[in-house]
Image 1 (cartoon, rainbow, N blue to C red):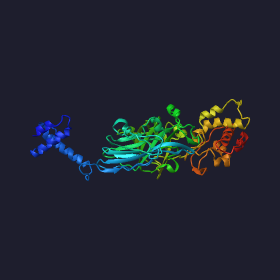
Image 2 (spheres, rainbow, N blue to C red):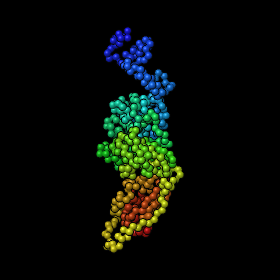
Image 3 (cartoon, rainbow, N blue to C red):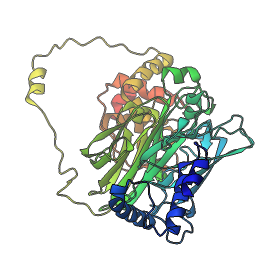
Image 4 (cartoon, one colour):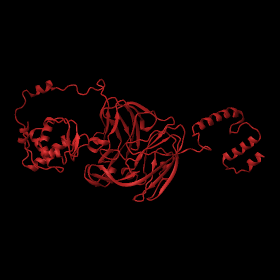
Length: 509
């Protein structure tokens, strides 16, 4: 009867239908097993099948019925926060709901940008799932959006990473499903044409697929994502800055930042931890163009998951993160202080914004790091020798004839000696180097600038209502150059103006 029944099935009938009939017949006939094995292997395969079934049962929620996975709403967080570990030993159906929103937000102090976002933040929300989870993904495009959007998740195995399935017009919602097959840290981004423009406007984020056994426990986890921005105006130009496609094509970035804006991880927004804690950084690079040389000044990464995968490297100083790639860094904190997080393509850090702070509190360990023990004058033999018999003929000096010449000459001195720290537009770097633009500190007394140049400056000062406690070394400038650069600063960026002469500088010595 079974044979005749099987013969009546269409040739293209699913194999599981034939198998089910065979099982039914076997059960009614008192047979022991039902599988696809050959007769000679049936006993051993049956045992293996039993073991596999038992294992798979343990890997599912004991409360599920008929093999259905438990449904869990994903916990989503904005940078630098990270959702908690899944803490599951079974797969689940994880529901992820995200919204694309186009909104104007801060790019730098006084600079705004029309960002395109996932869930209203740049980078988009951090997604955390477990290997084997089925992800039910909902993407809604806000009715006020001007553009259609979608999402390409690098964690997805399938054409476009979900891009075609999630293409969503303004005022609509799309849904698709995928299984998280491979553990790792993956980038996601919008992939609507022109793809580069959507990414450049802020549409990217990270999704972590935990391995089944989970990640080793650490004390603190943070979400850090680098990206580059291209604006019509130059770095620091005020107002709402539109996207510049020409600069983007040339890969000539005006801003390179962490977590969507200059200073996003400085001041009150600095990452915070304590001595003795182990910190894990989930680091992504949204691009769209530049490779990151990710580095924490004063720390050595104990472990780096290379390119966000399972391969590990140890005792790493700087790790490369490609555009559209990631890394997981982990290190234990031994010494307190402010650790500067940078892209070690270093002009990006001090001139384009790729700078953050990890502020660490706790007891000092002088054996690991002493701090400055002493300071003394250093006079190498060579310098004394060179001064003997030097040409006493004075070198011709180019001096300013009027205020405008002094300002012009001062601009050149500033670019060579001051701009790296205080920025070409005088805005400084939050919590590191005070602004010279509209500086109440300098406008109250220009002599402070002269003294800082010749003698250096250390200790706490307050500039425009914010406290700074960094160190400025003395700069070896003669009286003419000092007068020129201070005059340039006093006549730039909204300062009160005026002229400083070489005679005035000489009187301060």
